[in-house]
Length: 515
Ligand SMILES: Cc1cc2nc3c(=O)[nH]c(=O)nc-3n(C[C@H](O)[C@H](O)[C@H](O)COP(=O)(O)OP(=O)(O)OC[C@H]3O[C@@H](n4cnc5c(N)ncnc54)[C@H](O)[C@@H]3O)c2cc1C
Image (cartoon, rainbow, N blue to C red; front, side, top):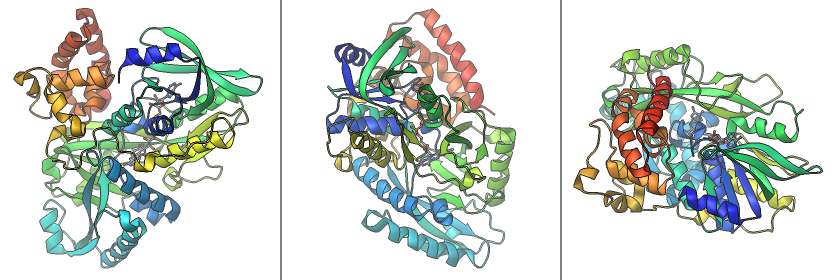
């Protein structure tokens, strides 16, 4: 995947079949589906692939235990099916993770035990593993750091775990083909209309400061929390359609969990669930559900949200985390579909809606990472249903994602490259395989690969989404940033002025991730 190839394709095509606005889970999923059905497809992302909500999730490919509690059965069944399909099609990126629900009162074990059995049944033959009830001693053996006071036992169940932004890049690579072009750093500014019909759009390539007007049979708006902004380009007076809800995660050293199993705390002080999940040698703890008025691409964690996570996690952990223990913190915005009744954000369904405007503009509203493939199928079928595209069948249930590899060593940080691992490692010499940090894995050849094949253009692209350094340890990322910038400048053929500018932007950006 290469930016100048995509720009070449752009100049050669006079009318696209599909233009997708937004390069998150939904947009990239639509690009894979469209590309595999054989449509001429262009995807435009304002910043970098996965820069929005899609790099800020809890990293779970799950049916959603909480949605089961809420009685959203259809969403759970759909998500469990998608979980199975995704694990089958990208076994190098999705792994089976076992979760322990510790119980502290007499009814919890039978209650969650039966609930999780129903969850297993709903997954059918796409299930990951059977749930079981365990004793107090077994719970302590699996999670030595769980609070012992009042502990009665626990329930183990299974769900999927993944690396969200690596999945986003993998989808981009899978979509990329002769007929499909993907471009990051391209901001859509206007929709082109012929009478009342949307027939294309205007965008700016912010890297080259160049504007384009392009035509398409259909335009699909997959901009997550920003969907309403695009819809307003078509219908300036519509009612509120998206209700953003912020979720924060903190990242701690693994000594706080000391287990390969995750913990699910089923009842926090605000009636939600809290996860503590082992991830790449660290522990991710979250999340919150805070109503926010306006969407921002770089949402800021609030002091109350940090306190809430620390307080609730401390109730269940023998080693109590403090603010100073936080290695990284990140916030994301859920693109929830707005409802007219006064539900709190935690009650709003996470299922997606496809909106078809009278102009033919198709918009994705809401959704989850887990169901990105179904969202994509529904969005393209919607375009077919209004006769914008020739009918072609969806193929993604059976399509292996780029890098597909069955035998995976989850302790190897290079597993995210799947079958490309050796190719990445063969770039440069022996020294280029040595990590620049002792805390996480980042090497010269990973930097080079990100630039050559994954369209990384900035220091943030490499440290936040091609690798996950910033999401694991923000201060350490800041420390190694000058070395990474030097290497990037070498591969991109940039000068000292570029390095200085990148570091200046980066140091401003990283402040959000440091407590
Ligand atoms: C805290 C949190 C935890 C979550 N955890 C999970 C989980 O564990 N599992 C799960 O399945 N789901 C989870 N989700 C939900 C999931 O992450 C989201 O549903 C999903 O990432 C949304 O993807 P998207 O593509 O719709 O939006 P985004 O990822 O936000 O992508 C939209 C993109 O559109 C781009 N864009 C905006 N305006 C323009 C424009 N004018 N021109 C071009 N591009 C534009 C943006 O830059 C952005 O990259 C979580 C969500 C949150 C907030």
